Length: 122
Image (cartoon, rainbow, N blue to C red):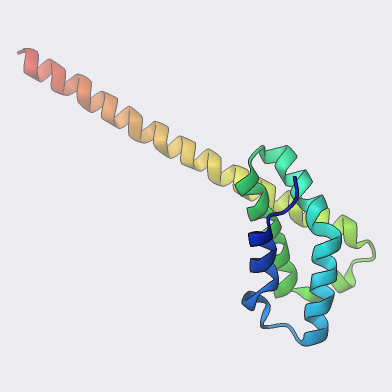
């Protein structure tokens, strides 16, 4: 599955206004060259289309914010994969935190319910 048209539009749209015309063209070429690679890696790791698109968006936002980091890399594809991996790990950590928070909240509710039941039985 490819990157959605909506994600491409967001990446290439008004949000890239900080870049000059030439840089914008370069970013568009990079997007065309690497977006599918990033999406495939992230989709395989996260098994979720929305999250895979989110990784693509994060990676290209990072490139837009710090284009010099990419210029310093001899192997662009390796840099893109590194960024992709960082963003996947960030999203996985977010998801784990969310699961832990919901478990903690569920635990509080169940302890409250048991306590409340005991009080009602008396």
